[in-house]
Length: 107
Image (cartoon, rainbow, N blue to C red):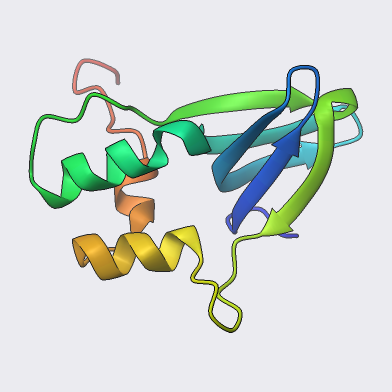
């Protein structure tokens, strides 16, 4: 998997699923910009309805000992990827909503 691609990460200790953009990977672990799958539906619907977003993506490092599997977020057959579901529902690429906004006071 390449940096910049949408991924679904299955984690252990505790068991968790995380979706987002792969930002970095090395022998110590992976960094993903996204959110827990538990919050995906709420996030998607808040954005689609143009409501105040209460579920916010974050950039998270997962040490390799927690990573059970990493899947590419791909549409295959009847299964629609999370990124494609977002685009169909909102009408825009999820990358725009996952990218942190720069702080105008920085720099």
